[in-house]
Amino acid sequence: MAKKEASKKRPAIRGIKEIPHQASQASKTNVEVDDNQSELDITGARYKLQYRSNMLAIIKAIEELKLNQAEVQQDIPLNRDTKIEQLETLVHTMHSEKAAIEAENVSLKENVKILDAEDADLIDQINELTVHNIT
Image 1: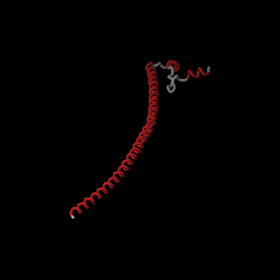
Image 2 (image 1 turned 135 degrees about the horizontal axis):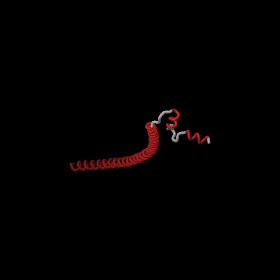
Image 3 (image 1 turned 90 degrees about the vertical axis):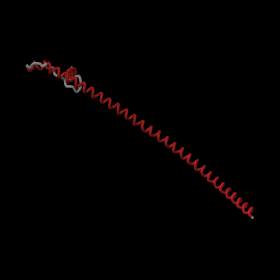
Image 4 (image 1 turned 180 degrees about the vertical axis):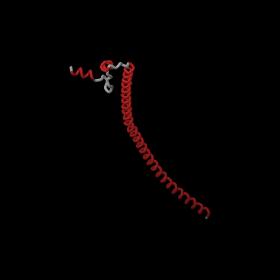
């Protein structure tokens, strides 16, 4: 029974003070009950309740945004890692291509040396023929 009496004394909604019944107070103090004041008290309690409801909705929205932000931040490193892997692959490919081009350049330089030697031989032969024909 003590629990029932204690629960009757507590307000139904936490944070909103219980509005005392003014009629019972009026009879004790011989003051007339102001209906407008009661309506204002009830309206104030409704506004407080609506305010708390709105605040809870805002808090839930903020928590949801934080969760979304955490998910996005987890995705960012994955995207970053993927891009880094792509860049590393590209660099590796470029190094391979550079090595192939350098090998081709070496081969071409050797071919140029061979052609220069052949040209030198041909020039020598032409010179010998020219000297031989003149004499």
